[in-house]
Length: 241
Image 1: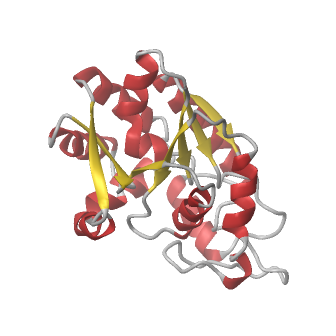
Image 2: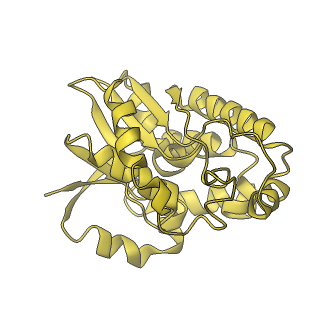
């Protein structure tokens, strides 16, 4: 039986569940990380918003940035002994209208009307790869990142039992949101050892281009992840009742 962690971007599943992914793979459970929003961008100039993010990440062209982030994801997966699958939907910062205009000048926006069918399209793509006995783990959408919301809706359209992970780092910054989102859900805690915690931190460190915008520094990342883990020496997943 595979455990499939559905990740919006090239870091979300490892950020949120890296310690559990390592514990499962270390115990012999097949674990795969499926990243949906990591396709190579369409040709054309970057939006101002995308240029700012590339500057913060220290990356170059859009194509080079996606290639780099995919390689970071492969490295993180090797550290955690997981397998990666990369899908072809470009990040929201690269998506444009039919007229070539950027659809999003911020990541915390409602789904653009032109993309209302995107969850159904993604669901169809996922459905072709899911096996009957797979366990699927889905982002909860804490923080409201538009790509997380789209992927969340897509996974729910599969009509399967799901587990949900709180989105790190957003749940660290908006802990009150977790309470409202999980009001009709049951919490399940999965133990993570000190070795699992350390490997989780190393897995996140593989996403070197993202650390400064997510945690300000590698040290800040390690402290934040340890504090998140320390509450119950594990990771919480949630299921609807």
